[in-house]
Length: 252
Image (cartoon, rainbow, N blue to C red):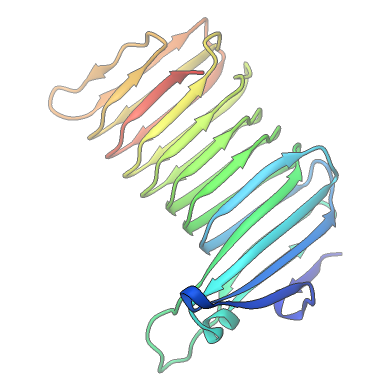
């Protein structure tokens, strides 16, 4: 059975004013028992998301809500829907009323520690950076306006941005691992060990392509370029696509 928790009903937060910037903040911290192979989703609107894996069957969740004033602070609600195998976090901005203009101020910055074998089904932010480290299962991350950084993942990786750079740093590439990244206006950079084995498919419309693995870049006659090939016999499947950004593969 799932339990629905609203931050307004919790006593484990503190409200404090920041005098120097005239900001209001609300903080929250709690630990939840969780399956080692459960699924995690986080949906944010304004603010960063930092997720890292650890060797515990628990989720440690911390967040800080920041707004310009108390009214805007109270409009921001973090909804936590969880069971032993599913953990979903979503930010909701309450309406200011039909005669109020604009959405008001406010952002939420999240820090989560999750079992490293848990699946990150959906880590999404509209306006904010996403950082994911040390996960052993699949990772899916999406940002509209923000950078995505993924480090040390041994499962499948999928990352998408509209206006943000994507940086993926791999300690190793598994033979059946899939790594996919797409961006409209951002660069994509992959770091992988020199002894990696992979098949690469990548293209850009208005950017540059380069790599340190000896894979040939095919420039289009008028516009665009692709960089496709096999390295060290093939293995992991790498797929990268950007419209107005560069794609680069570097050795660790």
